[in-house]
Image (tube, each protein chain N blue to C red):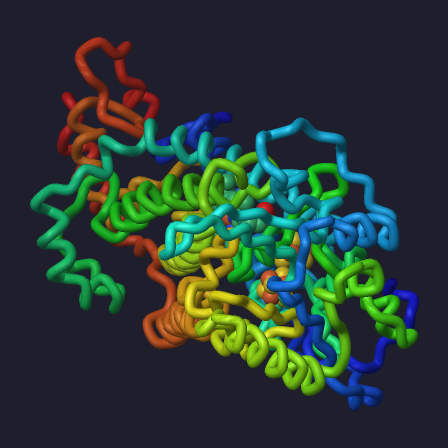
Length: 228
Length: 302
Ligand code: HEM
Ligand code: SF4
Ligand code: SF4
């Protein structure tokens, strides 16, 4: 992918493919899972060719989802570590919500809201996976007692709904903060976007002569900022 | 059997509509298994296989009379043998015919996510309608008696039908017909309860002071009942639950949790929408671009 001159790379091609694989799996898991959650939503199983096939394919998509989310974690965990800026940002949450960026403290590559989404999913994904294995009738039903399976299906449902709510927050934030969607489709953001939302990240890129997504370290090849 | 028109449903799994019930005024039936009269001959087990055309895989001798060892998709009823050293130090051979209890409040049906895969007829029989079954195994989690078994071959759940096909045309279940000692009786639930009363009185007179009827109220009563000589200790009989009820975990999962989950998602979506119409999108301003340019060039070596 070539990026327009003067922009910064927010997400590399690998990251974007990984992200949309994760997102695609998640949507399919929600649709097939919800078909078993409530009678009014059973019709969703039709999207997968009927109840039997929705039931059968859901856990397999779950396996792909787990691996895919692990990929996201490997790429993103360092930039999601909690630091002091996050507390300051959270204290200014009213200004964030009111779009009054002037009063919001500067943040690095991710703000506290994005970090919350990241860590919430980092917790919920393994919970969904492990409880999902316990209730995977065909392969694993003989390994646990029925009482354990009862607890697992309840926790799986709870975690699924927690994940769906986190996902709504995530999707809404991407719609709300203009320019974010393009960062995950085409991969780049304008300097103004970086200045407005992630000024510390922009500073770190500029200081190391990097076009993103991360600041350059000593071993990297010479920076391309001169192309501006 | 979905081609047989059934208009006598009282319950239908995963359904929010009233099921077809115009003909639902038949009396409730019950099978009464008098454990004290059972000789463990397994005629009922064989009759069940014969009537329902079931052929379980031939297994191995496991050192017990239980054969096969457990219920499976082809074994809907199973004699379970217990050797119990009673309080006087004598051996009692307790033999229980295991199988679906046809609960008045069936946990399997409550848990099932597939519309119409489990139904309950007005006569009380709980039946699995295989063509609607999706093989998820939720009925296994819902059942307090550990009865349904999912086939690894066709991914359908199986259990005793109480011979719903025979009962629908006025016959007794196959096991009842085959029993040589009259240990299995079939009729209206009222008649069976009354008959059980006579049996219990007789057992009491023979020294079984704790004899009684097993019709557990925790599941609203059952349409398969036992006369037990030790009704104070049902679990003596190969783990028959002392006080069966639908697990609290299942009740929360299928009850309280659903409206909460929907409310949570609705709240998140509505909050997002309200924010959108109140605060609106957060757009990058020309000033941001200008400042960014300034920052980049200030930093650049000249
Ligand atoms: C991570 C790996 C996952 C695995 C292995 C997994 C596995 C399962 C299994 C085995 C079931 C039982 C039905 C069936 O056999 O298909 C199930 C149900 C369900 N799953 Fe998953 N799942 C996973 C992830 C997810 C995710 C990410 C969601 C949505 C956010 C989800 C939502 C649901 C829902 C709503 C149900 C129905 C629960 C109910 O009936 O209350 N699952 N899952
Ligand atoms: S396995 Fe079949 S009968 Fe059992 S809960 Fe699932 S759909 Fe219903
Ligand atoms: S014994 Fe189990 S399978 Fe039979 S009706 Fe009761 S809950 Fe359903």
